[in-house]
Length: 97
Image 1: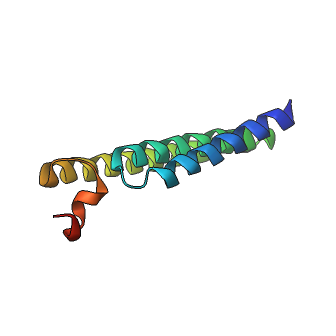
Image 2: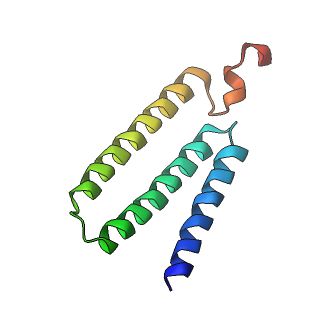
């Protein structure tokens, strides 16, 4: 069971990285894949802390930082859409005007 759980976490992390690398031109999908990677890291961090009987305050710090990261990404997305009209990264290049 332990090996299956580790394989699932590794597969989820690799698939999140693949989506992050393949959707690098679309900002909303990039932010969603980053949030997915944060969730996978949260699961693996929680699993690690439960296995070795560590204190769970680290989880609260990690969740606080991940919420701040998500809010910062959404604020960047909103400012980009207000300035340029869509969330494609190609629209920011002066060559595409």
